[in-house]
Length: 135
Image 1: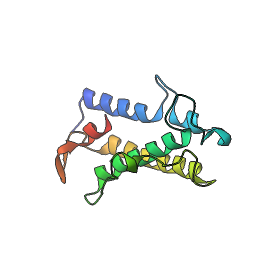
Image 2: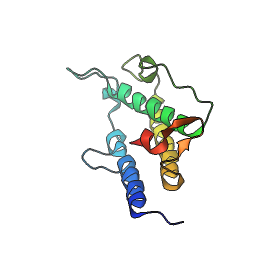
Image 3: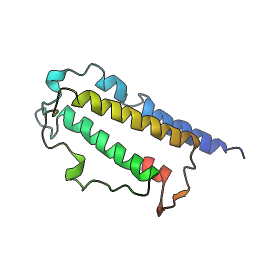
């Protein structure tokens, strides 16, 4: 059965939101070459460092992915489970490791978007749908 034009357009829009710069810089452009000395700095007037924001993206995206793909996933406690406690990365590899996980999880989402039924409810959460979690 072929997809409607609207579903094809929705898949493309979701793909582009995750991969391209539109009204903002792309994730890849922002993290590429981000100065190590600034990763743990909380800018004046803002509540979080770049590291805390990056780790928040990692945790939240992974949570949504795991919820979308397995019945056994337990989400972190909100809000404390979604934020790094300290502004600095905990190790010299933490930044790179987080970027790698975000990229891998994003790629898994792209596969779901490309092939999955965006409107079918999850069997383990009948009131939740893939598209509703992504949008």
